[in-house]
Length: 598
Image (cartoon, rainbow, N blue to C red; front, side, top):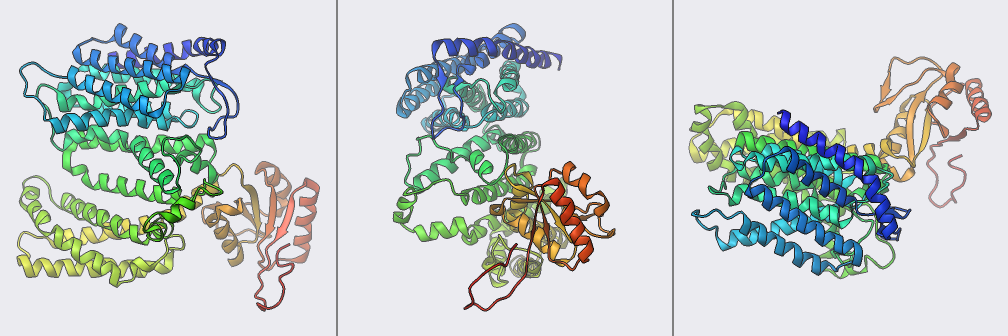
């Protein structure tokens, strides 16, 4: 293990050391990224950071690892893509020119991987591989839209891929991936927000080319491995691939050119709902780490990782649906969307998500049912009972969605899903499980089936459905609590109205109000409400306002002592803190509204 660590450290130190020098060269040559409306940065920033990444990677591989034909092919592909990116950084190649160039490099990679005497791969496999290589290269190019994003995701994906590749691929490929991860880590020190240097297309295409070529090696070696575990090499790239699909689809629906830049990426949408740029990037790091861990699990355990794969796919889909609702286009950009056939159905799928629920539930039903077999049986018993899973899955996929529909599960809004909806979910799961058991009994006489499987499946599915339905509220809560633009609010009153006020602040990111605590006149046994800490009484209010950086204090409307209220107002006035009050009122609809909120 010492050699990979030395490669990682050496590449990181070299990349970190040469970035400032390359940045000065870029400024002298005028190779800088100027701020424009469809880019995120606001200051002229030197490019050519990709040159530091490429130099550090190649130098670490040359000095600290062993070379073989595979390593030469992968590094050469990265170098060719790097040159293509350098040209684009200098003279701005069109999207078509970059696509043609990356496809040609991909074809050369497949040719370089050929082994004399081995059976030639099919034409279809070669075509898919060439498109995969070009797709990954351009996915990282598209992902380079926020400080530190492409570099961090690339480093995580490189490490995950190094652990995912089968042992017979060779240590040279692992060495290249570890060197790339180290080079990206060193570059990240200069590229984190606020970035002092950008990698440019030369860097993003280099990253995508090296990773894309390395991921194809198991499929085009002397003995190609195309079993289920070999599919794990594609899973670390789920985030950049999902980014391409998400951005391209929404730009097309909005009548925009999919290859034209803009601030409509998922990372920008996270910032739009309140996340800071750093926190938005960290979300991507966390998701990439999760997909990388699942990839390693898939490579080690095979089909036992299937339920987790399903959960990850559902989670990414839910996140995409939530982010798709964040407004990023203005003016006439959405006019084209209204002209798309079935635009009303598309709008319903994105804004209400009821139709999408059925598709997501099918994935959850399959994953939970399979996980129940894996949890209930192992070894020979699993081999004996697993055919029952395959035989009965179509019946389960018939019974459960119908039961969910009959229980009214698909007529409920995700954004308002709460405790009152739990009975409907419970009914749907129970009815679905009972119908599945009855069908298995009628069709198969319940031979080689287990009651324990259906019980475990029911529990897992109940938790999975509740988690998926509550996900929008969790995301909204996180957006409010992570927001850097929201005003920090201290709520006076821990009664029912105080809880209601806090719940509404957490549910409505558009209010731009972040509850940072509760206070009341007296001590309360509760230490936290809705995840918000209950602070000490008024005696410490002046210190608390400064320590929590409170922007405003809001009276919740709960009954309070008049003297205590006046004391709070006086302390806030002395500290310059805004004081407001929420007033609950049901008024005649015909009477003009006035003065309901002070």
